[in-house]
Length: 249
Image: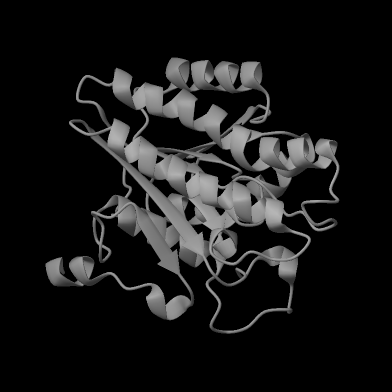
């Protein structure tokens, strides 16, 4: 029995190179996993990647998480088909490289802020409100991003700005959830992740997407160090320790 056995998890960005590893790990841990899918191609790719562990516990719905109405429709589909949501993970955004702040266009600024911040807001609003609707006001919301909030880069600084805002979004959510059983986390990965898309261009010490998913599952279960803290920073696979799980074994 896994730490997510019979839990219902929603993973936004679950068809992406990082999110698919999270989905696969959650399925291994026994969860029912719900994923919004933008395209049929990504839907089929995720199904093939998880077919050996899904056991009919992977549920895919057409949705565009950057579109307000589409997110609301997806939320309603989840409400109509599942008794509750226990865990929501946002692995959203991408990368931008092109111009320094004083040279980038307003269109580029708006696009990056929408992809990296507004999309997080839409998904957070939809599913944290669902947690508040639970009679026991219980749920866990996890935002996943890179280390850009701490490592500003020339010609990509707008991503650092958005990442810093994402971290603050998690902290605000934690404060607003005071007095409830709702937990909020921000996970910052300081090195690149091992993903299928990277192929062989990786280092052994990097965390894999599936290892990240395992960490999130153990975080949900309260088995990681500092499970009571909002912000978690991961550098390499050596950071993936589960002392509380070991103590109960």
